[in-house]
Image (cartoon, rainbow, N blue to C red; front, side):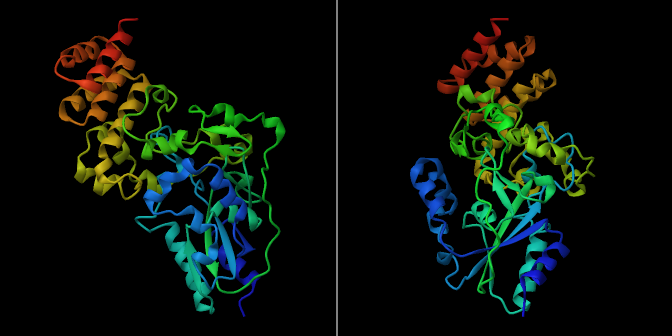
Length: 375
């Protein structure tokens, strides 16, 4: 008979950082939370994620009797300095497409369960963070992220993996609730540049920088461009300022060799000028939320990051990109970026394009020129 202890031993053997068990009862509190802010997560249905349905685990696996939650540290190794300012850490070694990293260990774990007579289903449909708290392996932060209870120096650099099984195991003690100290003075809320965090574990997901980088509608609104800073895909701002994360971040971590091997693909200049072939082969397998039809969004994000970098070496690259692209969202952001960077070359290019463009792009050019005239 497969016991909890044997399952835990297998999880740690496969280098998962923690494991917990909980019952299969519906996540009514989570469902109530979703009903209070329906507009906040309407976009998830476009991705095929029906969050309401996932609140009842039996709708995912009718024969399920328990939930096993694994915690995995995605910041086990450090990341290249050339990538950290621009990409959220949880995305830099995401293998949900390549399935050659974490997915291998998950498969080994579920194979172990099945070999020992259990039916097991890995699911991303149920509320994973809520399941982790119910299973006693994590608690919540004021930034709405999951923090480990014991693993990874009790930090938020963890991803929960939820597995439904058809055998009932004794549940571990739940740790549902916000575990942040009061003395932190809501550091994450204060530090969120886009003001997405509202305090007390509430977030406007549509203002979250991560969301804006890969799901935001159209040309990024003017008031969010500077707050989004250098981030091209994802954001770690609220985690980096969090005092609960400092012990883990203080360690000297060996660089992630998998990410190091492909860092050159994510050079900003290469991303700005990439074509569909480059994107499909080198970028999308690792950061997959945006399809090839959203190539414009990548380039728009890169142009914004270049503008916010205040690094004038990007000016010639932005000028070349303007002349080689036709999408108005890319062109509009390039104009804005050149206005931020300033200088004779940027001004000359903007003046050259001023009367050969129309509508939004022309407005962005004129706004950029007006900005330049102030200095």
